[in-house]
Image 1: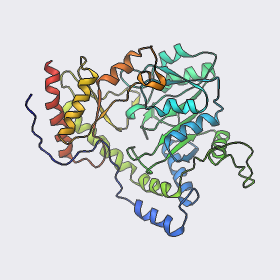
Image 2 (image 1 turned 60 degrees about the vertical axis):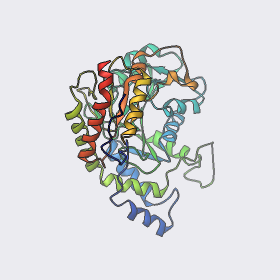
Image 3 (image 1 turned 30 degrees about the horizontal axis):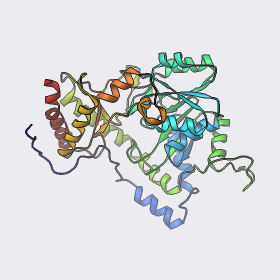
Image 4 (image 1 turned 90 degrees about the vertical axis):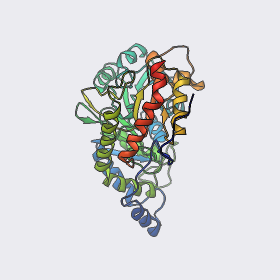
Amino acid sequence: MTALPITQTRTVKVAEPRLGGNEQRYVQECMESTWISSAGRFIDLFEQRFAEVAGTKHAVATNNGTTALHLALAALGVGPGDEVIVPSLTYIATANAVKYCGAVPVLADVDPVTMCIDPADVARRITRRTVAVIPVHLYGHPADMTDLRQLADRHGLALVEDAAEAHTATWEGRPVGSLGTAGVFSFFGNKVLTTGEGGAVTTDDDALAARLRLLRGQGMDPQRRYWFPEVGFNYRMTNIAAAIGCAQLEQLSEFLLRRQEVAERYDAHLAGVPGIQTPLTDPRATRVNWLYTVLLPEHTTMAERDGMIDALAMDGIETRPVFHPMHTLPPYLQEDTFPVSGMLGRRGISLPTHVNLRDDDIDHVAERFLARLAPLRLR
């Protein structure tokens, strides 16, 4: 096969933060004040402002999204012998956090439109040992929180939202992170807003928030310094990370607008192209465009999808495969096929999606994507 020409030499990254606001100024303030660890004015400020974004009374900041998820489960008392239902199609941290508690992650399939956990499959997997469900708002689209809330209420289950990829997305007008018992967010460098590394747990429950703060800080009694009534964790966010987060929150509306523009420009090139499926949105939801994820033609094999990723890399374009379904990974390998998760994991590819993309970057990505797609469509 004749190699396709490369029309651009610089790499178009799949994800990239914008750090053009007050990030340096606020970090410099931390350094000059010497408040560089887990105390300082930016931590409280970030928690207050992020709680407003999430629509909750409390936001408890942590050092990353995985620890936030573990902290939420631990604070809810999840432990050995318990089962927690998670989607098969997710980042591995979702299931790992359950294992950290000594509990068993029970996999469920996902919905083909939202790519999020399927409430009907969740219902089939509830047992007397089930204590919680973790809906993951995948790639910026909320899970069906209406049906999941009804299931959770009927069976007395905690509902812990994994909103690591979906800051500000909404379900029936309410922001993710405010729809369950607790919400969990990540602020890794590729997320909608970043603190470098960081996370948060959101909740309206005062008692749960107090417990989250206790366990986050090694289990130290807040009224008696260096007295530890129980074992906790060192999951605290640094003042430097929170300073970056405060600067990012000041730019959040700008970030969201540009992400929407990026998605709309991709849609103009790709929506309606025969054989592929561009992102779908449930009418009850508003998505945040974290990663613009396309499904290749139905007959596409995983090897062909991965070949597409390699070919686009030759064109200077970074892309990502959709997550390998959990049931195919060695720690969680199962014979159950989870057909929708398997299909999405085989056909899905995420294109560059971030606020630093220029319009000509998007046009170039779409052009090269369609050129590399042509042999698959003809097969």
